[in-house]
Length: 375
Image 1 (cartoon, helix red, strand yellow):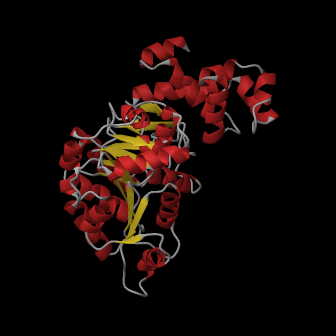
Image 2 (spheres, one colour; image 1 turned 90 degrees about the vertical axis):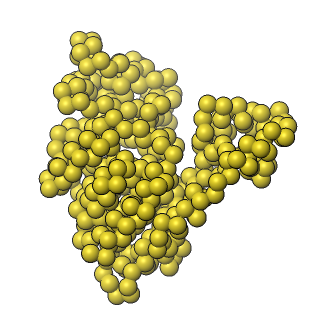
Image 3 (cartoon, one colour; image 1 turned 180 degrees about the horizontal axis):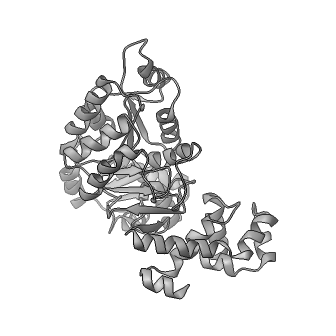
């Protein structure tokens, strides 16, 4: 074990985290719970059986699977595969892990990345849609991404046929970072027709990511789970075309539960692949989008308040409690509400009042997804 860790240049922490999520009966939520109770992934494997059984929600069979430590052998093999194929693993507590995804309760404990991309850029847009894209859908996808080039967005999609493929191609063409979220391990690429596109994505600074270890094939049940990663990584989601039911609508539904803004492209009444978009617009589950300015307006990307805010801060005295909040932003421009609550230890009611005051005075701005940005 030690030899492999040294060879791969990886620390022991990621080995145990990979092994933990591979234990049968443990999902992402329970894995995080175990880490919190025991103080780390390695500590979970070192804990005695009686202590593990007392952890709420962890059954005896699951505990037996942990104690056997058989998943550590598979984790070793995965680390060797990663080293051979230039893949990095990010734990949900790592600073390079996508911070937007980090705050989702069911976010993956570990993600595997092919490509060295910064996932924590200022603006991240998801683009999804039907695999049976029409010419109208393809044109709109290309046009909206081209128009967002000046905003320097990162484009996230699922590298599937149709709209996903078009979104990644348009991002590469316009020299934007793009990330393909896969529903399988990095030993393969689905669909095979996108092999060249996948390499272009990586060559242009983007990446492929997945929560699945090598050997996991693109089985049907993996795609809805993949969709939650797309929804969690982004600031907003654009649904270009969708039938009345489809994977794009699943992603939109998840994005809504994560407090992400959802946009949908309206289509002609009666068109099969416009039914889904028209329906979520009708049900107020998506903003209507006809041009890039719609996104800028809703997301407040068109408001340049930084100069005014800096001027106001020169003449504003902060209370002791406001200083607690502002200290969090000393080395960060953007912080999630959960982090502010945790670090200040202020009551939610008191904190809401402070944040509102700071927002009114142009010191902070509230963003979608319960995040705040320093201006």
